[in-house]
Length: 134
Image (tube, rainbow, N blue to C red):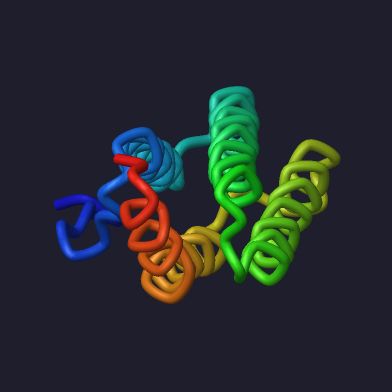
C-alpha cells in the first residue's frame, strides 16, 4: 500500500497539472520507502528531486494563473512559497546532518499536498477549465 495515493476527486482536470501531481505523489512515496534506509545520498537526491519537481509544478500553476488572471493567484502563490521554503530548509538541514528523513516530515508534506489541492488547486482547475484550459 502506498503512503500517499492519487484520488480522482482531487483531479484539477488540467492535464499537465494532474500529471505533475501524480509525479509528486510518486516522489513522496519514494521518500517514504527510503525511511528505514541508511543511504543518505539516495535520500538527499530524492529530496532534491522532490524540490525540483515541486518548483517546476508551482511555476506551471503560477504561470497559468497569471496568464488567465485567476483572482486567487496571490494567496495561491503564497502557499506555494511557504511549502517551497519549508522544503528548502528541510533539505538544507538534512544535508548538514541536523536532521534525518523522518515520518513526521513526510506526513506534513502529504497533508499539505491533499489540503492545498482540495482548497486551492481544485478551484484553480475549475477556473482554468472555464476559460478553455484542459
